[in-house]
Image (tube, rainbow over all chains, first blue to last red; front, top):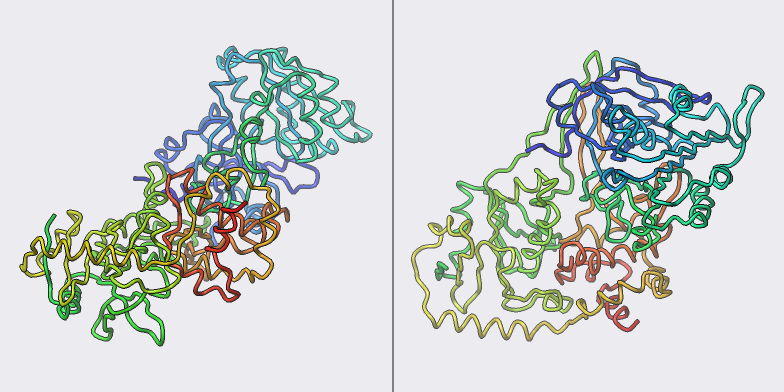
Length: 279
Length: 340
């Protein structure tokens, strides 16, 4: 039996600095052992516990898609003890990862539906995983129209800039990138995410929206989707809580009787309505 | 079920004989406390005890436990699994409430998905011998309100009950029967069984402290935002004594300790009573004051555990009541909730 507390050894294969402020980096990790890579079968929306020895662990959403073979990616903001140590590390360094943990975006439920992906700021990582999964070769035809609305405070803070540019060129995606405030070089859209959602006004017919972002963005975006006729079952998000074990034992990430690590992190608004508001 | 009678004076001798082959945890006196410790040449078992100060959960779920170790190499740190030490052991003479707590902890640690290997290895290798409470030890005992009773065999492999000059030993599980050889060959008869019934009835009657533990579940379901929650915690010191001594509290922290080129990852008991327990890196804390932490403790025991495992996560041992430095009493809280 696999010991769920022991990480798989991985090597940092590549580090990409995502933003101008340099405090958000994507770490591409390669498994040291082939069998570990095969055991780490994940679905977009799941997370892993990144292990920096001597510092501890940090739960981070998986930013790559399972269709990307040979590695997994995590986009990490420098914030606490573990993520700060991670940001000091170099390519070629060994570290560890536990997972995949948690439930996932409800892929089966999303199939055959129109998707509206709404992301704000740094909270775009597992949405990127979902988008890359859906647009991968034959997967694309399993999903209806895909509308992407993604915003950040300024152009320098947008994640995955090359991918955004590539998505914008595709005719099977409706991509809407926005920034709160542009700079001299910015030719794109300006405006807050909720406003852009209102302007884009995606139809709620046979549609599901998947929303991740800072609480303030979510608070102002939800009414827009209610007005567009989205039911609470068809508004899906992902929660964050302080975690340790990631497997529902250490007792700290519960919201009501659900553990965010094990029963979440993905919940529909209808499911969240049944829980307490303690998050 | 196999049963044997043993002379009352023989109990310590049986424990000593077992200790020649197994690790035998017994209650021992330490200053004015009783704690569970492995029996050795230097320790004397003390079976005439009321209850141990600390819950014996430490045998399966130690206060601090190594999960893995790691070493620094030129390329970074490389880890190896810390071998989970689980000698064949006997937990000799725990009270029925504490034995019941093991059944409750099993529900969490021994789930099919994500089995906790450290807990399960020790649990599987340990035989639990319960020493029943012929005379209920404390006025704060309320086991009969939370599905227990003074002579309960829940969570036990072998049940010992004092019958006048003897102990009646009942071998409840196959694991318990493996230790039959230590208990002599004095068989029991029906008179012993009926004497036990009598004693059991009397012991149950002697538990005077009662709480409406089952009645409050629907009230907890609907009163998460009730102003009542703001009335419990004002004198709470957030010391965590209640959760450390609780036989069913299982929350833990995981941390790394590194020295030079080597380190270990350990887990250690944590507490929902501590402000840092849920504080996030951003500074956000979903349980912002002691009010929310108290609500979590009560909800976890009397609602969430019931929702998830269909069992109340309290065994009525009364440790949290006896040891709280500011006399907060979970019995009173439950009583008050029942009147909401």
